Length: 99
Image (cartoon, rainbow, N blue to C red; front, top):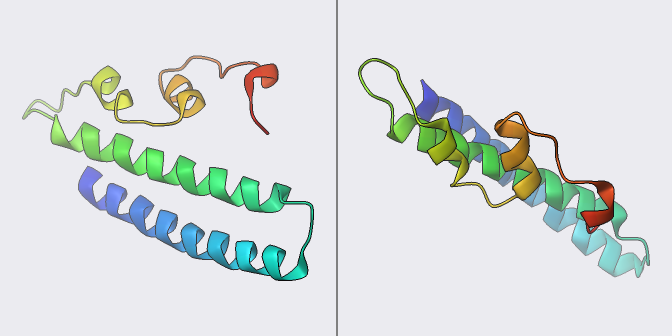
């Protein structure tokens, strides 16, 4: 089940990557100075990819008793705020966020 969920998340990440690319091309062609929408879509893609990696890590360390090492799975994440949220911890303060 978790493998299928990870597959779905991977598909979402792929679709978001396509959208990200198309927005990037449109922003570049228009020579628009505001890239905040592009940055937001890229962050969304990274979050979905992070969730995919988290679910894959969970499914990879499941035992027959359905016990999993969620803390170990969090180690597969690249985005710190996402890792904190999945551990039930608050994300870092906005002053530490790039955008």
